[in-house]
Amino acid sequence: MNSGDVAWILAASALVCMMIPALALFYGGMVGSRRILNMMMMCFGGVSVVAVLWAIFGYSMVFGNSLGGAGVVGDATEYFGLGQLLAEDPDAAIPPALFAAFQLFFAGITTAIIAGAAAGRMKFGAWMTFAALWATLVYFPVAHWVFAFSSADGSVAGGWIVNNLKAIDFAGGTAVHMNAGIAALALALVLGRSAGWPKSEHVKPHSRPLVLVGAGLLWAGWFGFNAGSALTAGHSASVVFLNTAVAGAAGLLAWALVERIRLGSASSMGAASGLISALVAITPACGAVSPLGALAIGVIAGAVCSLAIELKFRLGFDDSLDVVGVHLIGGIIGTLLIGLFATDAAPNKTNGLFYGGGFGLLGIQTVATVATLAYSFAVTWVIAKAIDITVGLRIDEAAELRGIDIAAHSESAYLMDEEPVELGSPHRV
Image (cartoon, rainbow, N blue to C red; front, side, top):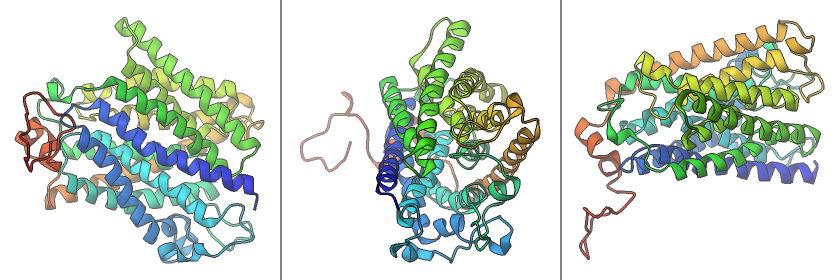
């Protein structure tokens, strides 16, 4: 066990944890001033409920021995409660408890991403129920497919995508971004449109500076997310770190350029969205491509995602904060482009089509993409529909128009001039 590796994964875990408030700021600035607290609470609340489940049985479902060796889901009882991780493993590259903490934040942030599709109109209790069920029935199995490697001696069976199909997903294009993006689409379809969508004043962003601050903090956290997935403080992490940096910058510039050409100006919201879309796309590919490949992926993601966000208006679904346009489309782009831009000079040591590898890798990446999308959409739709039928997903329209912060949390983010508070008032504002 190398102390440098341990120190790096400790730091990377903290960086990924920082992505939780970063996402809350990013999403919070994009909603109206009477929706921000609920949006941020959905992020923090969703991560928290997933963290509890992770400690009880989630880690075991993801990294436990695959039931029946089928590669579908791990044994939920193998590491139940994580007590087994307290003992020191002399053969482990990093402490198993640290690896469990690092992956915990992956599970949490993936679930929180979905919240952007339900901004301002979903009951908080329904969201917390959804987060728990979605993590259990969707994220944990799909993460097992993608992240659970079989042991070298065959004593532990892992997930089918990484071991049987041998698709490349360095840090979570399938399990994280496509998974969350297609789930956001399913939830938005069941939840329905916001009152007055798409022209209501209450759905407009209230603080673009918060969006930029959140995007910047997400960029910083992404280095822990991607480079930390190397699980060592060495060459692979360094290449991944570089690819993550240049791809994000390229995506920001590409989205801004497309906006300038189409709309006459480059917006701050567009710049932040371009940055995030490119970071999404480079996540699965960061260990498979060269810096030039990372630049190409960033440019393609920034340009395509800037156009893809228009789909919700053309198709009539209310994806409030463009989770579909950024995470779903960006994740698909990054996962599939591995089949073109992968080079054996990168840590994954596999060639794509443009480097003489033929169409084989592209086909493998396509199968992984289709399988993830089909499973996640179907199960998410069933979860959302079941909650809607039983306890209901939506707050009432009057509360939605007044602002969900008051309706769900009895609080306001900002003290408005028209809402004076008397001394000694028991009411929170």
